Image (cartoon, rainbow, N blue to C red):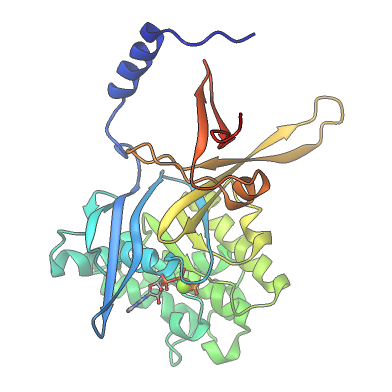
Length: 318
Ligand SMILES: Nc1ncnc2c1ncn2[C@@H]1O[C@H](COP(=O)(O)OP(=O)(O)OP(=O)(O)O)[C@@H](O)[C@H]1O
Ligand SMILES: [Mg+2]
């Protein structure tokens, strides 16, 4: 039998919660009730509807969601290419709503790197792989000596296993090689965050795996925080954290951790699904769960000492 928590227990818990540090204080990326409204021909589209997201330094995170759910809108905001209508967004100490045009340019050159789906959008066609990487270093204004620029380019090409492409132009490389060089270009100025919007969308599944391995290498060897938008379930299944966006809001998260079987010694990834709880206490239950139990409009709740029970509405049953 479970005992119901006493009022003193609840009051104690509430005080503990209030004393916790402010939302996102230790995160590298903080999105707080982010809103982006597009208006075309007088028609409003709410692409982001109060999205909350925290990403800590060193994370490799996959972002998934149906077409039109707001993934690219979020990535463009984080990349500094678009500005939110309301809410707050901070990346590595930069406030994305109040940044001046000059700060924004510096932010795009030094703080974030991005890789797009279209291989042709990532590289300049008339430059070699090595030149594509040294260009952002020259544009950063850091006055890096030419030799150090070339060394950096070769180091990155080697890390991502495309050193043989150093003197080739994009049309002399495969799509997979181009995307790996694109990752090297994005990493040229050692950004705090690497953003990728469907980077494997134009590639077959084997090549997509290689590209994903390149992102993992960057995350593990360089410690770069990475956010990847993907439709690829295989990719989403391999990262420790997958965040799902639904209707312009983060809805559920899957966290995976490795567990070693005590008897066999085998390591497996154990996944657990979480729902986002916003500060108003709103919770979005996964559709598969609510449909399975026929829940709609209203549900019955019960507070237990260590969990909250949610049942289908039984108020009309006697
Ligand atoms: N520049 C824009 N002007 C008007 N509406 C836009 C603009 N960009 C996006 N939208 C709208 O905002 C919503 C979210 O679009 P977004 O591109 O972020 O979705 P997505 O999740 O990236 O989809 P996909 O998986 O198809 O790439 C859509 O309804 C889209 O039509
Ligand atoms: Mg998109």
